[in-house]
Image (cartoon, rainbow, N blue to C red; front, side, top):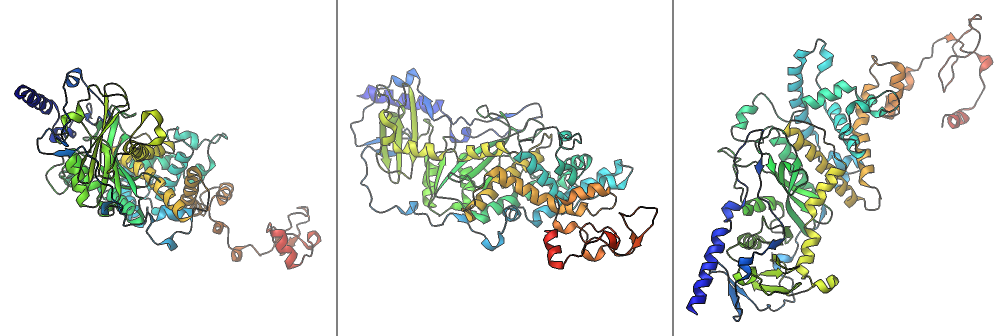
Length: 573
């Protein structure tokens, strides 16, 4: 018996020494040059392989409880008595849905404007004008780099949404302005190609004159203020549903950036990592945080351990009784206990090297396929499932408190906990797919633009969720919604542009069908003076003050018909 106990002590020490500690589990925060990338250790595979050395261990499960590898945490092998009442931490205290003023939403464009408000637009306009003033020195004509305004910036964003809705985000921009019949007329109506290209080059989100000072304490300085304003809007306008997902996004980017990440399991491999809190049902993104590695000393330096990341991301829903689904990079027993104190439950896979897990549930020699083991502590359940030989799925939940098998899984006998996890774990991944489907992103070498494009993609999804929440009776798809948003953003600027006398008259008439109805000349400005009859031969030189009410051309009485005002209105219609 002494020999067996010593063998178990050796096995425990070996497992703990070979496993990663919590401090080693999160990404190393070293900075790198443009030629290298920081490799993330986010291996979140649920099925964990079991080595041969692990399967040689013999378990004894005669006791009513098992002890974790830390020799402190105890797990009961008996299922607790089921409560009739819903636990306090599972009672949702906030209704899901839009929480702003519904009277402010009267159109599709209002769903966009309520997020992208005047304050955000004003910062972008001022920051861009600073860069335009710097660029103007390279142009001989002042109008080639003239300052922009809010109407033009909104038009620029509208054109980006139009490109995204038509899946033309990576298409050559010159094709949009092609005049051989293959271009898109709304682009020529909005602005010329050179102006569009210049605005994208000069688009800024902060004052570049004092950026270097702010960068000493914050790597996100070039877009920090605009990013936080967007996130505040996301939090203020909508309550997510009962089930949410916390996961990481990788926004593709391969150029120079001090916090660029390498995630081999992601399709893009390289990019900017963003943690996100997403509704697992309607895919509304409520909070995001850019992973910046180790920040310089100052107010923006934060703890990047998985536990602290989750606590910051779920801050908008603390105390609301919602459930969070995470993968095994985030999950730990201390995190679960901490969230329970804040009235949040959590479900997720967990890594086998955690000190609180018993060896008996980690080593699975002689376990049958599709078999499950459940262990219990106060307000939490630990589960081990064998989907196939030498594969072990370890999950822990503070939402589930009993042994329940999903009957829809047939002979696989999957626990209900796994089915729930599979149904809610894909919230962030689905948002990534939706962003990629109608992405506004253009090729760029500036990482602040990459973050801005991602904000625009997320804004498009969130605005669509708000619209569907307020108007469930209107059946529309997201592509149509984004096209209407693009049309609404470009229309005022086109109307403004149509009044510029420098443009050819025929081109200004073309602008009228895209602009506001008010761009036509007012009634009081119609020509009412005398003029030559347009029908009589020019040699006769017939002058008349009469003119047609519809085409407004001068005509003599011999070519006019007497029509009553009522009939005239019908003709105009």
